[in-house]
Length: 175
Image (cartoon, rainbow, N blue to C red; front, top):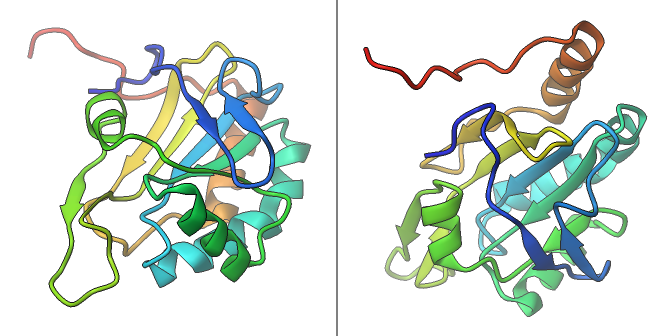
C-alpha cells in the first residue's frame, strides 16, 4: 500500500511523443503529478486528457511536472492522445499490469463482454509525488466516474506549496 511520506516505486516509462520518462529525472521543481488513465476505450479518460493538456501551464507555474500513464500499448495510447488533442502532455504507455496493481495499488478490471475494453486494464489513479519521490497525495478509483478536476488539484497544490502543508494520512502505527 502506498503511504504518504514514504517513497513511491520507481517509474520509468516510454511516452507517445516525448521519449522516455523517469520519475527520478523528469520531476518538476515542486514534484510530479502522475495520472493513471484507463485507456483508449474510456471516453471520460479522453476528456480528462484534454483537460490536463489545457491545464499544463497552471501546473508548470507551480513547478509541477505532469504525466498521464496507461497500461495500454503504444498504439492505443497514441490514438488516445490524438483523440484528446494532447500534443504537449507526456502520455506514458505499456505500464505492466503487475506494476499498476502491486506497486501503485491500482485496481484491475476485466473486459465487459461486447465492449472495446482490453482483456485487463488498470482503473484511474492520481498521485502527487514530492521532489524527494515521496507520496504526498493519492486518489485511486474503482470506476471511471468522479475524478478530481484539474483546477481542484492545482488549487490544492498551490495551497499546499504556499503554506508548507504537510502530507496527511501518514500514520502507520498501531490502532
